[in-house]
Length: 459
Image (cartoon, rainbow, N blue to C red):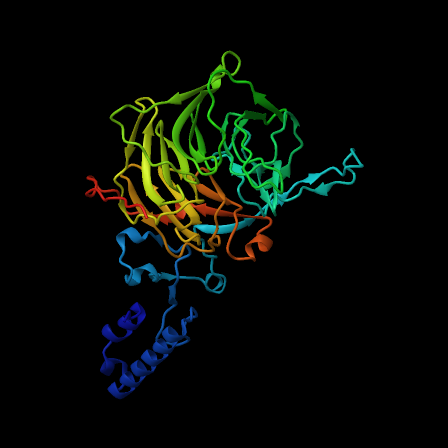
């Protein structure tokens, strides 16, 4: 047990006989002190004990609890849930007004911008913008545009497919439903999007009308100019990818890449490229055929995809026979696939999850498992050494969900929408974003040599 310095000083630098205090009294006072200290510890009190034997030192819980990854701690490690006390002198005002704890996860309300009333163009009768949530099966840009906004398009709102477009500022979470013109895409779900500069790029999805049972697929390419709010359908020449949903897209430089998806009972593992700099000259899609010696990922849908270091990384997905938790890398320059031998705490097989890249880590959250149950765990793949980490006790995390989206802004990873097994999610999260501040997560130092390869098993 820690003995305060003042107590050591009182009874080690002055003898009992010199101070005129009998040993009986000394032992009685020490016993009284330890009984009081034990009661304070049992009650978890942060108040100082009023006693002549105690100094102003007290046990202080650190302001920012360390969020420790489970990769380097065993599940019964007591340090995961323990806050190490700091013995520092505190003023009375600091003791009565402790600083709030900061956790990686936090929920933050959207700020709905005011828009003019339909009957009053001079904005004297402005109304708040409608909220983009609740919805699922939508798409958002994985990174902010040059305007500082994330673009959200389409998805299920209730039981209806939508084609509305929202701009969400990552600076202040101001959110606005924008009026668009031009060749506006039909309402849809299962589409994918990307961005370049101030252009929002949309392709694919299921655009069937309500009441129809068979998918109706759109394989046209659409561009939205954020400055002019105008949609354009690109007239391409040559072969085009077949219509599908559950695919993914990303950009590397001025190249747009598309992978996977399904068109009902058929699943894909093909890669297509569209060069954005050819829009005004000879716009066309190019199928990329991997080299003969290259392995291929299984056909899949509802996986995730990010771009990193001039390559493409996909994770998870399903072909309705298996759910996958494998991680693949595609090198566009060499047209080769490679399955990554990841180590650490691998995430379980899943589909319908979301992913985003921030500061050299790919973060994955949620999805559905092999039994269709929605998940609420989060993992991170350190891309430099292919090591997975999983976490506990990161604060007020989002509920279990699938059909959501994720995007990154600096060190922050943001979760947008989704559906959940919990009925309350659809009603209580109308105007909420969940933000993961990755700066609050402490990762183990990367080893100089990678650990032995770990086989990734499909479910």
